[in-house]
Image (cartoon, rainbow, N blue to C red; front, side, top):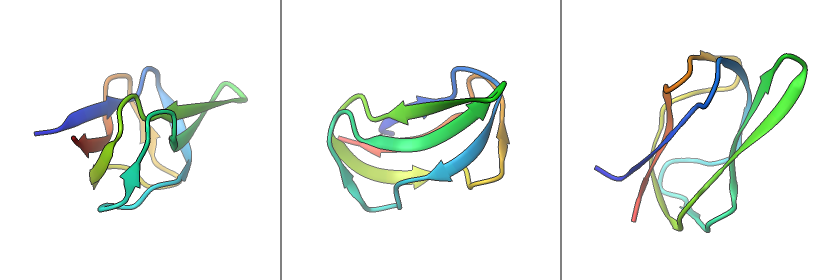
Length: 72
């Protein structure tokens, strides 16, 4: 099923930096969130290929919501 990258808080999605099928390295920025006037980058924890992007810029996400799924 892949590695699920989840939001750690309720936030707005400012930008999505990856596309499905794209390869990423550990530490690459996947999504930029905004909450309470703070920008929070969401980074890849492991290298892999983007299997699914579940959000778009402008979306509001809840704590625990899946943002991106990365296959090993």
